[in-house]
Amino acid sequence: MSTDTSAPAREPAALTRRLSSATFVSFFAIAVIEFAVPFVAVATLGANAMIVAVLGVCRFAPQVVFARAATAVVNRYDQRTVMLASEWLRVLAFALSAVALLASPVVGFVVFALANLALGLGSILTAVAVQVLVPLAFDDRDLPRVYSRLGMAESLADGGGPFFAGLALAMFDVSGTFVVAAGLAAAACLLLRGMPRVRVSEPTGAAPTRDRSTLRHGIRANFATGPLRVLTGWALAYNLGQCLIEAMLLIAILERTSIGAASYGVIKTCAVLFAALGAYLATRLPKALSGGWGISLFGFGAIGSYVLLGIGLYVPGAAGVAFIVAGFALDELCSGIVLVLIQTFRARAIANEDRAAATAGYRAMNLTAVPVGFLLGGVLGLVLSPSATIVAVGAAMLVFGLVIWSPRVRAVAA
Image (cartoon, rainbow, N blue to C red; front, side, top):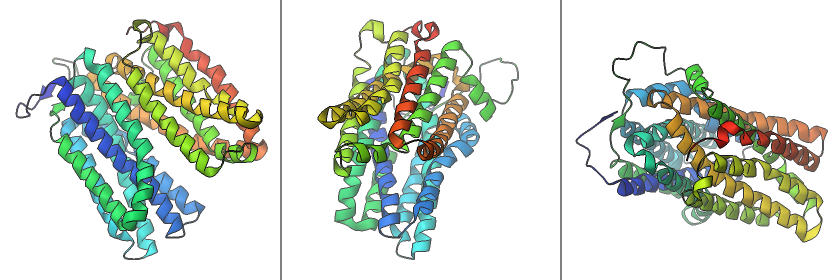
């Protein structure tokens, strides 16, 4: 590891606060834009479903397409520079979006697409840089606390961003909302200026090795050991199954329960708070659950929670609604906990020189599972009823979730 000695030394607690604050502000701005762009595209510009789909592709495709490029950038430059560049990219995208509608709807659509591309590129750069930065800038014993704070910041931002975006669109109009988002991204830049300039160094005296920036190498690093193979497989199954269900969940809920659109929005927003609670509790678990046993238990809880949604669709009345609410809450709570535990394990299990490629490969695989899941869910929804599909997929997730009880995972030390 190399550091820039010109950066002021900071206590771990102060550095954690600064990084988590920057994460909250940045993710809050992103959540505002992710709500505002499709809403404005449909409500103001009259976008059809295909345009909304294209905007979604522009948001997530760069994180797969540019995974290798992100690895090379993170390995070449210090992490503070990468994170700052990513945040300024968002500032520019949001500022251009603020004036796009002044030209014409066509220009607005083009700029929104470019803004989503910038968001996607910024997301992969930031995600890889943070996963490289944390193990280099903090002691091993501080990792769970740091990941817990980052998880809480991200969850709270994801929950509050859409609510704020709705208010902002009503109070400040469209351009004003994008200006506010640009200001938030700029504030994140100011916070990130206090981060240390850490960068990955090749092992001293190491023999020449294959290119560590390739996506193939990054994917391979995620399957290098037994526990990594199991956890990577679990993550892919979780994301694939979740998106299979999300493709038709709202339709099934509106068809078979008394939950309306407004109630559904409240339930989803409140569920996010359980993710923040899970991230908070992750560092306060009993010693026996802070390692592999905790990963197995809460990983199984997260992937198995979707069975409750399926049950809720077939149980009449208030009991069915209770099952659905419990399913959402259990998923967010368990995923909030297990994410901190898995991030801590990955930080310890993956070598520094492989970390950027492994993170990029991990995100590329999981983000590829997202559109595949939605597509398969849509196809299954045409063959089966939405509610039957949710039950079938939930049961399949529960069965596959048994894999995370592997002795290799349970043996992981805290």
